[in-house]
Length: 366
Image 1 (cartoon, rainbow, N blue to C red):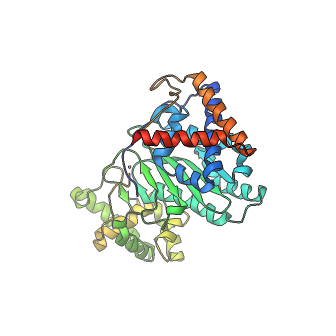
Image 2: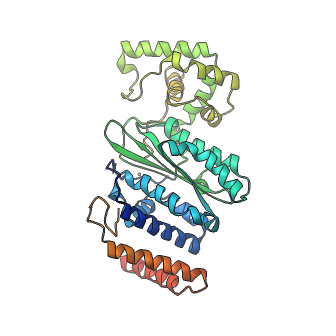
Image 3: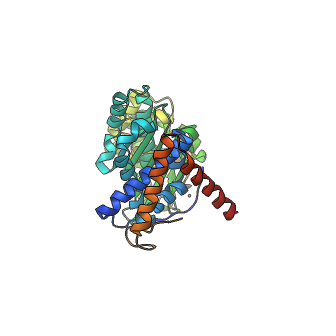
């Protein structure tokens, strides 16, 4: 897993129409150029890289490192590429707030509309599990409010989702890539981008393997026994707060509120932690409950290691680091769109010139 630091403050997301239209055209042209030159999978790989994604947002002028860079950039790409998805072979679903809930339906609709190979179940599962991991298995104080799912016709996919911390007003971004995914429940991220946090319950850490196994075992216990243990833990914590080093964001779950979920798991008897996590109704409270019971009753501790890990060209829409220069912006759009049109007709001089420019820039940088 790649890790690092990149703070994402929550700035206002208002964007003038003239600028949003240009942002949409430029970001669309860049994406088309990448697919034209390197293929669909290369685009997914780039979108899963937080540094490339951040640079793309800054190049087209989005919010200069604020949380709006993620939400508006993804929205612009989805809107701008609607008429080009069939030709590109890459499809965009989800988005901010309630739009994210439409992701499973959009995956199915794209598959039917464009006659794609039937990977619907696997893609819908990938969308659901990536969201479930970052909202329940990683408890870092950030509430997921943006889920953007990209996939190609061969079933490869990438996810960019973002959460907000209501306490300090910062955002955190989570990147996923099917190519690098070996397990949904152990180090699954391509990257997690944000401020380093303390006491983050991380059930998908390698260090949490024993805690995951204990959680599966506890899920198979009679619900009454687990409820009784949770009540006892709550009493102990109240009497002796030092018993468990719990941050304010990780209170002992109220046993009565998760009893229904405990009974569902008892009837299901999940075979492993992934099936446990995928079960309907299993959320942060249930995950935390099993982790606490595992620690207090069985002496198995979960990991509290935070999984967390700039550039601009045309300025930012909010005037930082400087206002957008419309003339230069339009020149960049025309150059890319012209190169793409010529490449499709067999005239690749412009595209080759751009590639030579990239090689020259790389040589200067070294």
